[in-house]
Length: 219
Image (cartoon, rainbow, N blue to C red; front, side):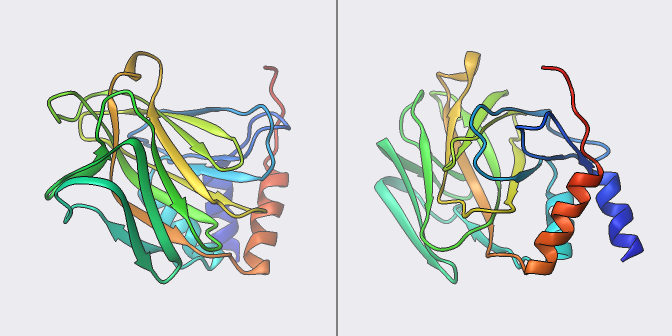
């Protein structure tokens, strides 16, 4: 328990009272920020895959991995069955799969929506922004959860990881789109990690750690 508490204290930091908790890694490949106006659920945000996996394990969350690199060509939408139910991908322009790489919205400037059928509480993924020539580019990616909370990740040309663990409500969907100067890029995903409801003891530990580290900042 002492080792877990130390890990929690190392990773957790907090924003103002209305914002979810933000978990960051010591050396981060992403600069992940967020803006929340109507928070309906406590959400821990990760910008590092190792930290996401470590925290999931500590909470008793068993993440299942989904890989989209085997899909090629055009799709109107895509439904993939897993142990947590059906995971659906959609975009108003349709989808385009690049074999061995990623699944993206078919047109630049579109939103890529990922829907979850069952009680998903943790979602992590490797995300990209793609230009009109289907080449990954640097830029800002906005990620919006089903509760309306939005987060912005700064991606390199190699993409980046973002992950979320909700402490009180299911995550029903995750929407991706280019943000600001990147609004004319197409969002893409190569892989996801999904987890079910953590144990009550795990959620209690997460809540206690968050309260202990809570600090208020002026907006």
